[in-house]
Amino acid sequence: MQRQWRKSTRSSAGGPECVEIALDPNRAGVRDSKNRTGGELNFGVTQWSRFVGTAKGGAFDRR
Image (tube, rainbow, N blue to C red; front, side):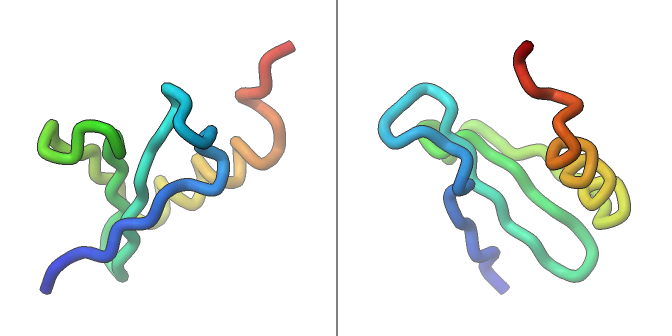
């Protein structure tokens, strides 16, 4: 089964911060949308959920 990638809603249009995300029941994949053949990072769904929750909580916001 081919993974369905989508561009992050937080990626800037045409800017350097472009990532794509693919979710399935067992893992979350992240890759650079400008270099799709450059590999991907994969995380377990629990780890990905924690990361997203932390990011939404503002832990990574620039101050």
